[in-house]
Image (tube, rainbow over all chains, first blue to last red; front, side, top):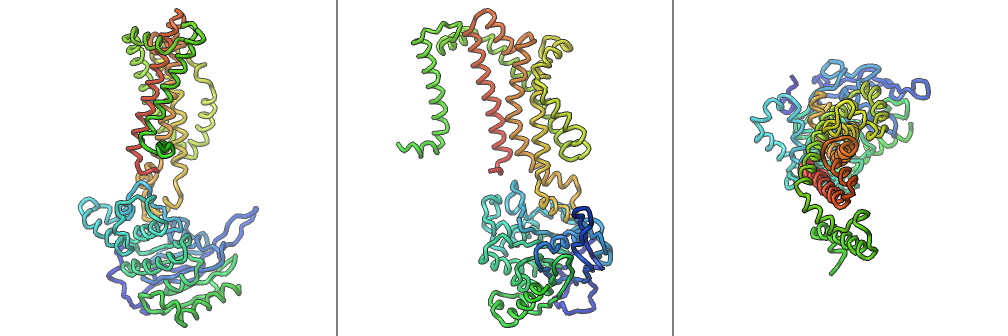
Length: 276
Length: 255
């Protein structure tokens, strides 16, 4: 039922007429704590357009990860609602790609078989997996080449470094051309050099698919580098305290990190995190 | 020769245990000779070998019977253990109702059940099969349940977010993740089943290694009893080895 958005999404994101893919409508979250309900997230309202890459940044414990769980439908929003194409999300959405800080590759599968996993589960690929195996292998190989893992297709996860595993995990999250890509601090466990390298690779992969990207991160530079919009969340009970539009041209590169514009955006976000 | 290097080599893993076994028998033989221990107390290895050759047909028949009994009981234990493990691992209801019962049952020494089983089924192979089964299914059930329970939630989330059904999550993640746990338990359970059938044979039976040992000891043929013990040791190692090798092939990916 969901068509991949690759072809239909215009690269021009300033197209205002486009209806949003995701809408947050007075979204909140409570958690039982010592006998009473404690508010974690309060009244989040925002909308995300097709092909938009957004980041949520904020102090730890402000419910950033919960936002991903709510969008994916794994734990639907208990207060307010999140709509995908105007429909309230009540159960796990199909055709979502997820990558966590822990790459969670399946240890009994080789790199390429790990990347192929979504195609064995998501329609329409699932139904034609046997017939189109060769074509799917090509797709997986192309993604692995993008992240320079072409020589590690037959390796098992324990034979790869942490960064390589995370790259394979990103390929897996995008191979089925998801409408929504959810990233929960995917590079949090990597060293600074590897992390910056991964930004470029993620951007490359994402630009092939051009789906909605939602990134949870602690790294403000990462948020600026990758996003079209950065949402800054306050401390608990948190809501969106500030929104920053990033209009740097794509593909972005690490030199831009030194530009005045980049640093201006970075300090703007930083200021809003520390003043709440 | 560099002993450190040898211990890490492939030859070392074969030569060293073999040498240790030979050493044990040599020391044993010498001890019997030097301290003039009578054969009906502790026969020397050479006497045991003599008895093994003399009673080869009886030993083979008894060994075969014990092996078949063990394997039948073990097969029942695998089937029951896997089904129980899955129910406990997947259903909260089964966990709450069955698990305490299982733990309670497991604390009963199974050897105490053999006389009852003999009353119900007679002194034949059935009590031995059941004792083997009763000893072996518990570790299998517990390990399968543990395997299902320890699947990383994030692994399941990746699949559920793709719209995978419960069955698909089980196929792609639950089952393969549980295999190493299952195999770890099979190695233990195979030995348990073996212990179970021999205990039962020595308490109430009409054949098998356990029966042979009891018969031999009661007629003071201690070398034959030891020959049977030796045979049991060889059978046990074969059983364990079989599952250890199978494990290597099936879950080659687990380091």
